[in-house]
Image (cartoon, rainbow, N blue to C red; front, side):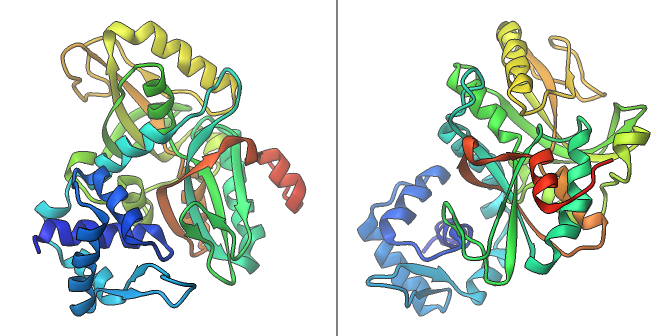
Amino acid sequence: MKQQLKVAILRVLRDANSPIGSAHIAEDLQLYGIDLGPRSVRLRLKELAAEGLVAASRRGRGGGRTITDRGIAEIGDALVQDRVGFASAKIDSLACRTSFDPATGKGDIVLNLSTAHASLIRPVLRAMLPVFTSRFTMGKYACVFDPGTRVGNFVVPAGRVAIGTVCSVTVNGVLLSRGIPMISKFGGILEIFDHKPLRFTDVIYYESTSLDPLEVFIKGGLTSLDNIWETGRGRIGASFREVPTCMLPLVKKILDELEAAGLGSALVVGQPNRPVLGFPVSEGRTGVILAGGLNPLAAVEQSGVSAGNIAMAEIYDFARLETYTELADRFGIKLP
């Protein structure tokens, strides 16, 4: 079996977070540009099982397959050239599945997830909710999931809770539904001074990675959001996108609609064909900088609470989200 196919199947199983069958795997493989039927997938799964990389689930009839610890290690050991670009492919696939309409406030958005021990839910919320009072995240909505709750293919582990925040890929999807292709170039650490973006200090290009850049930077301790909503100084996660200049007026209109719907606004919309914060843009395009939806969860990491972050985790119904003030009231959290 080719290494690229092996890694792709293992990644699909890992990202599913619950047992899935060959038909589901075949569908997800298409998102990576791999066209393989369910029967062929079953044959490949037998090979991977013989290597100890996947296992049959004991749940229900048929049960599906899961990735083993050895399979997870195999992904980590895979050649870089077999893994690069997966983040970019995932952005494109999730954008296609986004159906949110800011005019009606209905439809599906892209959700980030973070898990923490259930006993720590109040400290987690105390750390993350103040970030929503600034403009340095994706709007004002979030959600909390109890242990055992299924969110798409993800099941919240026993003894843990999951916190969902709106992912900035939602903007890609909303623009795409209006016929506007938004290209995601890189994610990075954006230095904020006097409440305004100053410069990118670290960046990772989506086409060159299998991981979400903001997950990497958060785990690396590169963000700094302490009282940023008051001081206007710090380092946040942000992404650099490009849109066609010929559609810039419509892009600005849609960004205004998203802000009115409570999903935040762009931190920067550049000038046509001009660099943004020193980074060049492609001919015929305009640069846009969006705050990372993981920023509230970055504040949790800074607070010392151990959490596992999953960027671009699932598609989720916007109507089921709560505002950060509603969450604060429900859990008795005092906001600044």
